[in-house]
Length: 486
Image (tube, rainbow, N blue to C red; front, side, top):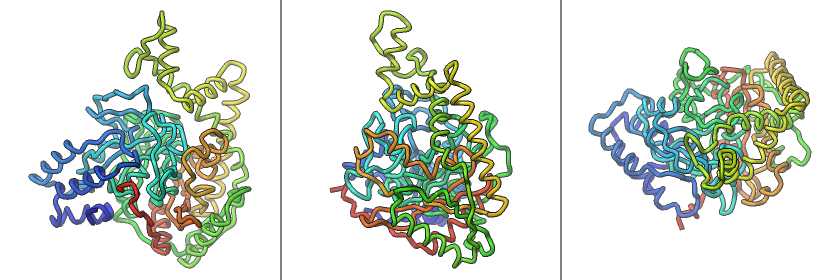
């Protein structure tokens, strides 16, 4: 394996800017790693030929004043890429080729990057283990037959296995932070509206948010800088001045107040997670931060509220897949209605159908007030909790997940157990605030465990700074034996 692929995104960008390496050499190194992979199943579409061509073109006329000069990047297969298949992990979009580019991928290409391939994900981003994808489950590089988390499982797996120097995912209820925690990588869910949703296949529009997945906090800051922008085509996009997250990164956090919510101590949480959390507190204290006990009383209602709001919005968003304009169309049926029914029955997987059914039910006449409206009121209470807490503290520290990565198939037949994976991540999406997961240690099986830092709206810089300070003290090391190449 080339040593180049082990380097951080920031190091790679600096090497190219200093003309110490060429884009073609870098791209070849990642393509070799991708070709050696026999088991991870992290890619749905590989763009090796076009990536090499773009690398050669870059080397002929290098533009070195960009954030990501000549760097190949693979992205989650939920971002529309012009002329390249975008499947959302579904049979419904198995052969869909968009003729437009998502705003975020376009921003990355404008900063000098180019497409290395499209990464596997849970179907329509619905899942916590990457087992709902039509293209098969993805494996976690930490151990065979282990899930990489979801829905951005292909992204976390490819990143941890050095198949891409950085990547982007989407986070609706934890789909960036949970897979980052499971694979020993860094994942950031930005403030809702900081990164455009235009050109991303929709799941739940009031919760979906794209964000970076990287190997370090420094790389995360660089990627966020490249991704974030105001977009008139997204009605929820925030019009704010562009920030230089990577240039303003510092590990000086003396005097900052860090909140510890008592409600995040849940039944059945392992002693390893508890120990990890205590270690995180100690590191912050040693760095000069003040630890403050806080309460987020409505946290216990976050998961039930989320599993009403998200399926309701999914039911509405996925109504567009009818087999008429684009995507899969069933050949069965004697009339239009039967064609619709058969298309949706054959085109969607079980988890997607489950969520459409729940969503349609809670939006139906007679149940709308009892379920959807009530869930939205609870959502406001959860946001109010965070608003109150942030009057006392700068950031909140919690575990990222209640456990480390589990075995493939272990929770597939138990949706409730699967949904509980998102217990620490979901409240953040309901409140629309930023949060980051950083690798913070290992369990007894040597599987990675993550710590989550939650920040105030649009306070990504402070969040990144605190994460950077903790990361420096933890000095996490991946323990991989590259079994997927054997």
